[in-house]
Length: 147
Image (cartoon, rainbow, N blue to C red; front, side):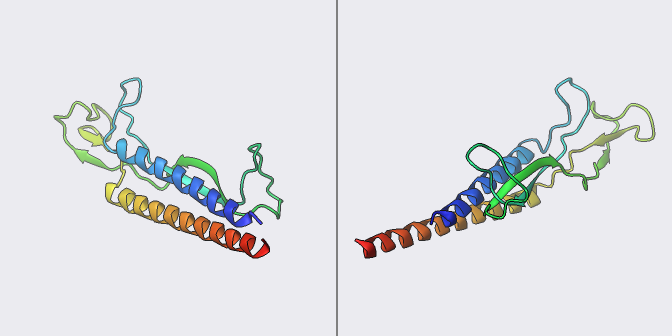
């Protein structure tokens, strides 16, 4: 009876995690230094989703056919990203030696694409909220019929 609410809830949780990750990408879009002060540009994070849901104990069984909804499989680094570089030998962050001498590494976070992804995540979250509301209304109607 509550399967539809579980599906919608798992979708809302997944989209919230996705939006948090997008926010971190946007916040670090100009971060060139790591925690040690070394030049190590921020690498974009990406959320990977999988079918199924996590039970109340935080356990997910891959072969479980009763699981409905979606779950966050992992949050990982975007492997497709190539760190772009600009030539600016006067920058304090420019490489001092090697084949990239005078070039400044960049994060490669595309803020336009991140904003588009954020809008998509918000819309998906809203769709899950609407589905949950519709499920609640149907359950309330069914209970009124039984009473």
